[in-house]
Image (cartoon, rainbow, N blue to C red; front, top):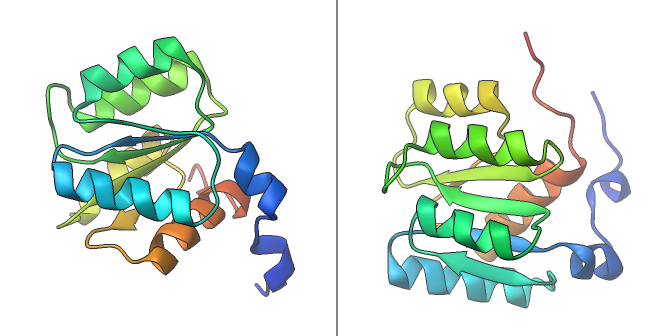
Length: 142
């Protein structure tokens, strides 16, 4: 299927309208990801070192997108994703990992993840992951 490039882009206004929560246990990776997202022109950005702290942030404000580490911190990624989507099915959730395992990623897609970001990331891979998760076709239920 051919997609027009314009259909898979976010305007500066659309980027500013997004609010992104980053969950990353490694402080350097978390800061780098935060800086990358900010430099790409995305709106409100917040971060958390683990999944439970992320829920505190979610209680403080709504986020349109969540980039979350797909390894267990103080909660399994699957449990985290289920709870987020129980609260708001429209939240775009994108797991991240240094060493993604197909079974783990597939399991998160089944729960409702909308994309994936492999670490180490680049500015382009972060932007592509957010755009594809936002405007790309959802993963088929089958």
